[in-house]
Image 1 (tube, helix red, strand yellow):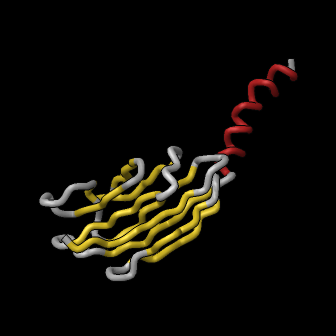
Image 2 (cartoon, rainbow, N blue to C red):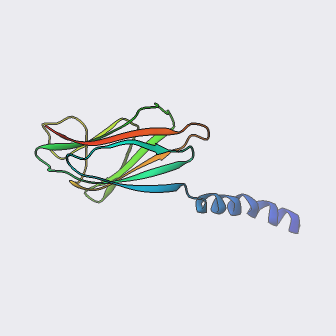
Length: 127
């Protein structure tokens, strides 16, 4: 009977261990006029892009030049988290194309691929 008890608890314990194993994340700061080229994001890791843009004249744009299909991004807007695939454009004005984001924040890009590295380019675009 004890065997069945431990057998039932094992999946829960393994899921907690899996959550604790976070990706390695490297931080980059993005400013207007200083794009970040060739950000290398190895397989099973990620990048944190700190940004600050003028909400009425600028957007943030990030693209993976290697086109890794397992890439995802997350950011916060008005207290809620949003998720999307790359390429991603963040905006705070209805006149621009892209996803709404706070003018100052963090864009987390996660490379979920177990095999392929990403080569990111991120920039603040003047519109």
